[in-house]
Amino acid sequence: MERPAWAPRSIDISVPSVSRMYDYYLGGSHNFEVDREAARRAMEFMPGLPKVMQANRAFMRRAVRFAAGEGITQFLDIGSGIPTFGSVHEVAQAAVPDARVMYVDHDPVAVAHSQAVLEGNEGADVLAADLRKPREILESPEVRRLIDLNRPVALLLVAILHFVEDADDPYAAVAELRQALAPGSMLVLTHAAYEGIPLPAERAEGAVDVYQRIRNPLIMRTRDEIARFFEGYDMVEPGLVPMPQWRPDTAPEDEDPYASSGFAGVGRTA
Image (tube, rainbow, N blue to C red):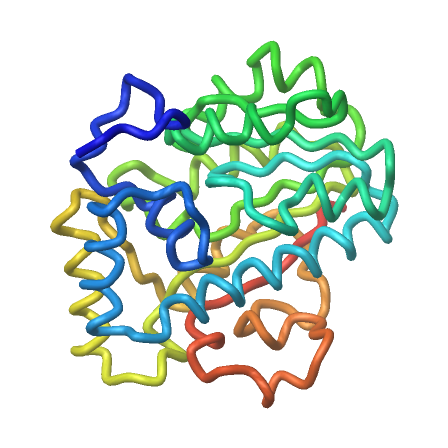
């Protein structure tokens, strides 16, 4: 397998990556055949997976515009993935030119591509780090340079928590991040769930098994379990809802049924 110039030498390009699979679902070019093969296997069970990812991105853009409209100018996007058109820094800086955006991901391809995309952008940066170690994120020189934790921050955890197993205590990680944020900060979150998928759960489990086999378990939590991540936040209307129903730009009923797979919400600290 030939290694493209944009692929860091440190990565094993024979092993699928959820970041690169996500890039493939969105029609991106920063993925390998091993990623495309795994994504196609998952799509054999859930053919609407690209629609799910598109709904995630559309919600993220609406939520960023909402946060900017509420006066937030700092964005911390953990599990940011590979930048594509309409990424957080593009949306935030279009709304607020001096907005600051800190991307965090542990996938070397996501980090390397983010560095290339952000070159020359003084208001945005990327950090190689893991959500499961929030202290390392919060105390990093990159975050301290760009983000003032004494002022409100929009914390984005979009399509990331369902890749953190219960054994790694994602609730504690989210709580530690919340405790570091100033009053008036926001949590922007999406999470996969069986609820809303227009398929029998047994069939959807086939896609979940694909992620299990590539050693990136996909944890499908219930709505109540997802709501627990918002402890300490006041929910912004309309609450925790299927992604197309959160402050939609178009009528939700016009959306593909797969777009309602999983939940999205925004919370604000007092």
